[in-house]
Image 1 (spheres, rainbow, N blue to C red):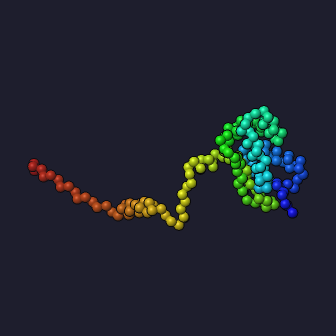
Image 2 (image 1 turned 90 degrees about the vertical axis):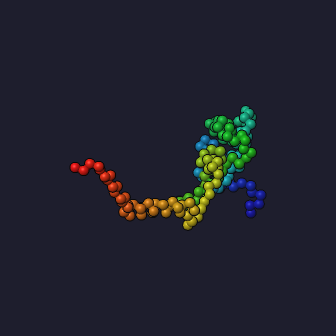
Image 3 (image 1 turned 180 degrees about the vertical axis):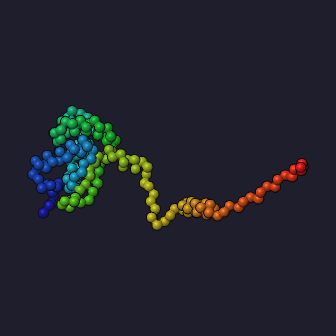
Length: 176
């Protein structure tokens, strides 16, 4: 029975699991998004979010605590310089997990875990707002007159144009 079992052990020993999560957290902080299995992404989120929260207060003590988890000075520097500036006003929820579907080889569910403030595409779509969608079968109301106009122009080109009556020459006064 799994009573009171808090985290997923990922079929690894404690030291192996700790090293795995530290390596994945380093990659996430350096690259801003990583592709992994859904189980590992769900295990990584509670590991990395408290570290990001600690980075809001830039002190030597917090830097040493985070370094004890990550063991990578470049990831710590990235966290306190670039990531910290974007998440200062955010109260939590620094990561996003997007499901990608099953892996081709063994069918394991894959996921993309990313830092929320670093996805420019999603940020621009949220600024534009939700786009309105229409059903594929219905044409917009404004499209009907536009469709009729080219047909009328084509019919007018095919029909012979009425020739204007030739102007009468003014009678000349000199007849010679």
